[in-house]
Amino acid sequence: MQRPSSPPSFSPKEVTALFKAVCFRFKKQGIDILLAPAISENGRILVITARRVGNAPTRNKIRRRLKAIFYEQALYSLGHECIAIIKPEGAHIPFADLQSMLLEVFKRHKHPEISPSASHEV
Image 1 (cartoon, rainbow, N blue to C red):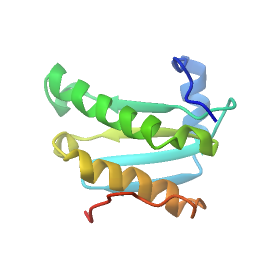
Image 2: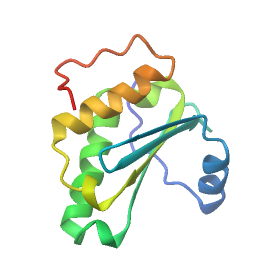
Image 3: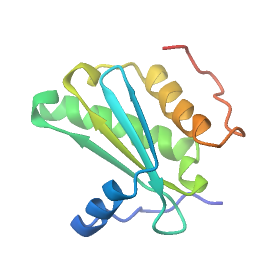
Image 4: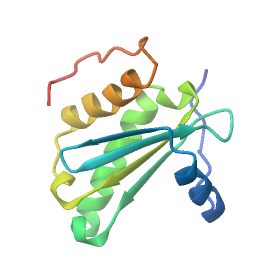
């Protein structure tokens, strides 16, 4: 499956439905990751960062990192929407730790075919 060229953003109604349909929760080290069944063919990721997380560059950095992992590892093809809620203590998690966390979430949620290529224990 090919990566979607430009994933559509979530509408307010989709966000509400997404939170109601959450089927898996993962909480660790300043980040909550929720999974819900995908609405469309490909899954998407929604990253929520409040202002208290840090300034705009800090919030954008964590968003870019999570989106990069989601699409580079082709997690969109597994049929789930992903919601990442970032807390202030989670703003400075290293990329490798974020990657291992996100892969662990999908692996725990009935996807044993995922194996982190260079995962680091958190």
